[in-house]
Amino acid sequence: MNTNQQQEMITIKTGQEGRFRWVAVTALLLAIGVILKLVTPAIAGITPNWLIAMYCIAINLTRVSVKQAAGIGLVTGAIAIPTSKAALPYANLISEPVGAIVCALLVHASLSLTIGRVNLRPAITAGISTIASGLTFITILKFALGLPVAVYLYGMLPVVLAVAAINMAITQLLYFPAKKMFGGKED
Image (cartoon, rainbow, N blue to C red; front, side, top):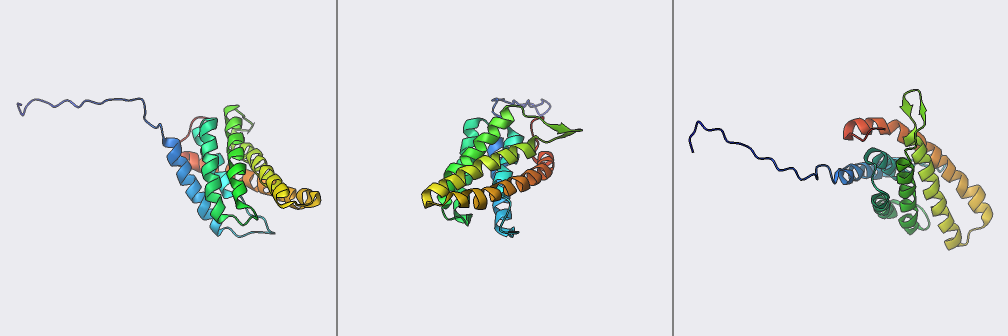
């Protein structure tokens, strides 16, 4: 080959670029969620559900399919088991997929509520997803442990609603920095 000849670079495009980006984004956010879950103290017996907030951010950023969201929820449920303080931690294997699926359905419904130029979809999806996951979890607890209806309605349900409100604020606040860091599909 003549040293004066230029070598030509051949690039093969497979169409698969970014195919598993959602896995990386979700894994990083869930890892952050686990750390935050472990170090966040309870205030009046209530702590944010960092894992739900993080998978809601991931699902809003990557707009995964409902099937992929179910997988995210299942992984989240498995992660939640060893870190859970609940009487029946294995209920997370059902409640977290429910929350993640609800989030994906809301994202795919192109839910958009804006105030000015701020899209509140992250907060809304997190609130509704937290309620779906939380209701599933406490309903499983109620029946598995034979808890009275009064405990369910007046003890556990208010906690679910409080955590949903906290998760709405957290998800909304963290979504835009996460979008800047990880990139995301247009709102």
